[in-house]
Length: 316
Image (cartoon, rainbow, N blue to C red; front, side, top):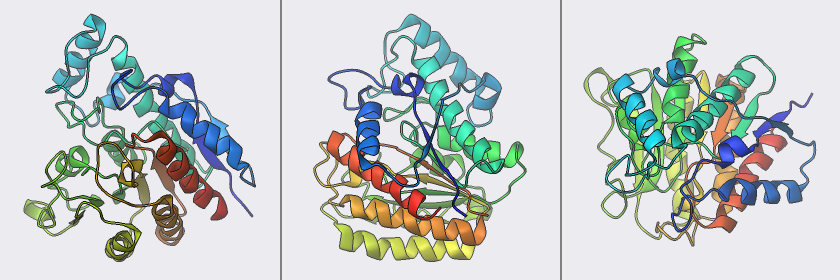
């Protein structure tokens, strides 16, 4: 029996972006959804509406002082929330809260058995730390979702898998000393790309030392090198035995992205998604939520994210 695949769509998450000429524009949502519709997947996916996260939900990962700062600067509508990458545009608090809430809606739908897989295109804001914005990311929906799964749904072993070109530093350092948080990240070597972190030697701290997996790749790495790295991720996840998988599938790791230097094709994303479906079926009762993450070549994000959803559908 096939299960529906949920895909989230709506002006609320489309509104998360920073306008021209900022790389993270608000057109990314519609570019993806046009490509997805043209793919005519069978069985068809089920479209779902966004929802807004409450302040109490944001507090699961973020500090109250930081949430208050974002709220105030969003009302003022000027300046930057970080050192210059993330503008404090009017309304950014609400848009960022909609991203978090929509990822939580996907988590709830999967946990309640409405579907085994779900995908949120404008999400995966993995650079935001518990107490600050970074790298176009205001609130870290993946970090909030991991805490939500533990505190609201009672899970203990949540896996986070990231194939965005940039290291998911906000998630990594948010759980760096947590031995039960399962973290695997393939990314461009931090010596060549923001945020400069994620060396292979970074495996956790304290009781969590040796429990995290970072796989940096050299600029120009292609699908063959991705497949070699992915074998490490697959073995790591299989041994860890997660109860839920959060998948950040940033498309800025594809060749032709304007701000990164990896050279994957969309097949890397399709293969990763298919593998995660198998691992989720084996360990997690099928529970898998994908988030779009980065990607600044519009054709790349449309194709890569559509291939992720297609893999979810084919595995349903």
